[in-house]
Length: 285
Image 1 (cartoon, rainbow, N blue to C red):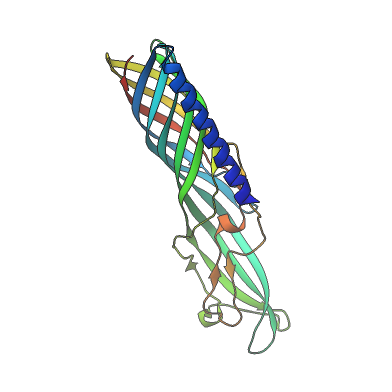
Image 2: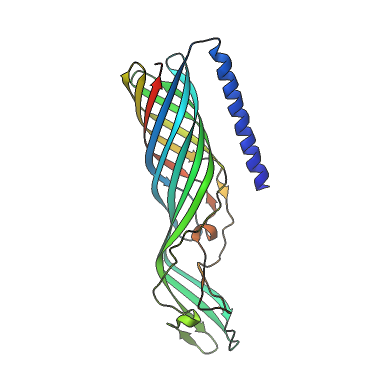
């Protein structure tokens, strides 16, 4: 079902894109169209808005670079498309994390509770998207405003954890808690593995707004400086669980299993970003 929805979104986007090109080509034959090619840079803040069942989202930096081509029907109103490489960063923090896993000692057969505590856990997330915008722009004397939609195709995702935890085993039949026995999985102040872990992210559809000031550099060049906001409208749902970040393996207790927060506790992925943008444009003004 998810693959079908993804294919449908891509098909709709390609149809709209084809219609846009056809209308533009037809219009060029009947009215004067000014063409404007631009190189754009952007930087700001972003979040994945994962709404985790444990912990909370935090905001990190975002950046974008790309090209666009606008066709102006007259001197003020235009429509354009382009291609951008966008980097989203964000993450999840969990303060005072604790978990309990009911398990069994394979040697003695005694049941016990595997307890994990962490004063601080932080997981950073990054996604690189290939973004294809379709935008409408109005440029006045000294200012501009643009709005439209973007299709974002993920090309890379990664999460990385940091923080430390302690684990121990409580045996209720003995009313005893064992600690500092690494060969049994009971460790003290151990670092979470600082390794890259992928997470699933599907194609996103983004509502985009941009406004700012236009600086005339010459008869065929301009500099646009402004602010932008990109908001995902698809809100990819995820199945959050009550699994633990650290999992005990009875047959191999010295080698604990680690889960990432975004693959365990996140309820959705819905990237949002905003910041400043610079656009160097060339063409008939």
